[in-house]
Amino acid sequence: MRLMLLKFAALLFPLSMASAQTPTPRETAESVASLIEANYFDAERATSIAGEIRAASTSGAWDSISEPLILATALTGIIAPYDGHFRVTWSQPDDGSEAAENGRGRQLYGFGEFIQRSGFGFRRVAVLPGNIGYIDMTNFAHIDFGNPEDPARRAVDAALALVAATDAVIIDLRDNGGGSPAMVGYIASAFTAPNAQIYNVFHSRSGEQNEAPAIYYPHPRLAVPLYILTSGRTGSAGEALPYTLQAADRATIIGEATYGGANPGGTFDAGAGFAVFISTGSPVNPITGSNWEGSGVQPDIAIPSEGALDRAQLMALDTLIAQGDAAYRLDREWARSAFVPAEDIAQDMSALVGNYGGLTVTHSGTGLQVRQGRRPALSLVPLGPGLFYRADNPLQRYRFVTDESGAATALETLRSDGTISRQERG
Figure 1: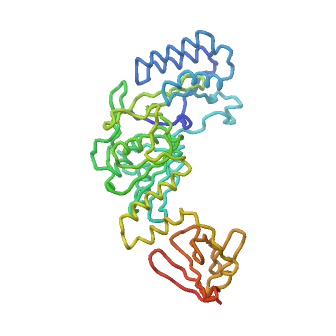
Figure 2: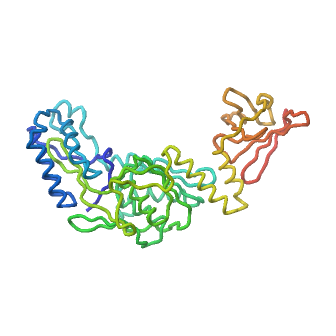
Figure 3: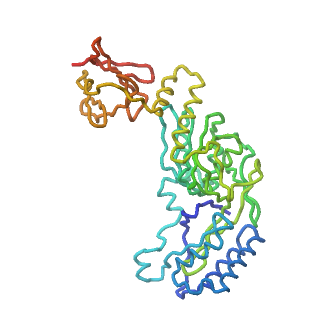
């Protein structure tokens, strides 16, 4: 059984076609109740939840509803408090109507295609200044470990390979709605020892399923500083990774408490375009003995999510600077300086304008810019009197050399590898 952990906003599973006859609200309610009763992972609670649906339906609470979207919302309101994944949806059945032909309100493609069309969940992979790896994920694609050419596994391997030589890693899950535990387990194995007893075990009516990957990542990085960013939008499988690695004391979680939907499941057809997402399993972490349902994953560093990336970079750079590696000292210190607002500098920027060998310095309302030939102009950010760094690359600085009268006579380009070049003013 493939378990899927999905935030309710991303329920994109294909639905089977409904019958042409429109059911009454009571019939739809009974269909939803019966599906929950038969499939929800906790049989006792399933009976109780189904009973509440039937009681509300019998009271006539929904008899006057004629719009299916309104009925779906009403049914969701009954069941959502019991599980973070419960959701009733409606989409236009493909019944030959004009609305169906135009695709209005009708699902046009499924979750698998959605994942594929979004880079298998990898929105951005980069190396940030100071040699910090950055992976921004919006979803967790399912990995078919039996297929050596599985595109989702190739995507995650490529992402991990790009940051393999970095000195720290940041995984950004602030906009991650969930997906497959297979990807969660595989990424966790990239930062933990093989066969580590850290993986969630999903309990369902049919048995147990372990989140440990069928194949472990072959080159795990056991000591690299690891930071995971979260927000209130981080849901489901997006919560599983930080929860697992936090419990294993392997990652620092930065940002906001997550959404709080732990129980995986799938979408069940309730007829006539209605569908209900039902949790068919519930995870138990071997370290905590619990999960994040309802409470969410609590960050180690609780700050507004919009500032989480900057905080993670600062923490990573401070950790690396403390290591005292002389070769990379400037690299890390200069990267860190970009996060410290410069004090007001009493300096006439226009006096620095001019030609310096092959470099031309100009001044506009936004500050100084330097250009070399036909190359695009580079904006400069002041660090101190006569000292600037490239706005897009803090590892390159520009220092204006002045004479006794304070007039600029040369421009030096400084790089964090220690090299310097100098251009005399023309």
